Length: 291
Image (cartoon, rainbow, N blue to C red):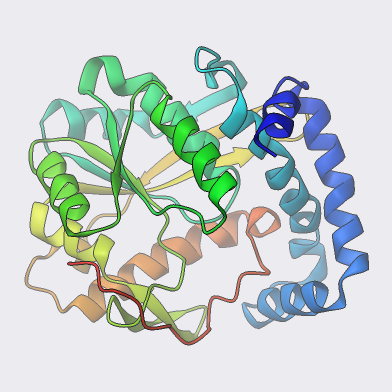
């Protein structure tokens, strides 16, 4: 599988995206469980078929992009695929002032490209982007993803354990930056219940605690997919004036503020969100990561 990924990484990204679009629709019509879960989540959040239907193709495109994101040669840059950047003035101001930055990057658009592009752009000036990494369950995928991310310019990966969280905390306090996927259901004991599109969702507390304890600037970030061969638009929007920036605010309020920021982004791009994810499921017990 690793060899296949690396071979597919050499196929033009635009062609892989087109194939992914087809794959997205094949899975949609071939799996009633996937289709029903997708529709139920999008409709419960208040979106119409016209709004969420593009996410069917986007899900396939996201999958088809992975060989390029994970398996391309170490010297091949993602930056030529970025069509535009916006909101970077505020990000650069935070890093120039050694305030540090957390990028809230939910499962929308191309979060893989977003992290790699930001790291490539800023590593030489501000140092590497520090991020936590949980190994995949399948050995071959864990090896592929780990080797890919560790070999990318500007990325510093830390394990999702106590030492990794402490390392991330040190990096942020020294003015560094990180990107975190905030919309996964964390293990039991590592989250709180907070509203997400009007329904209670078990929400991670790691990101809110990092924000409150370090005083870094927090941004909602997205790598919007513009279409096959058209590249990506990377955008950052400051998430200020909320419980995330108040160290005295209850963690439940901070988690709710984070979810509200994610909701706002999804309302802008409902056709690129991963709607099939079971966001409202019950958390499972797991070895606790210190927060």
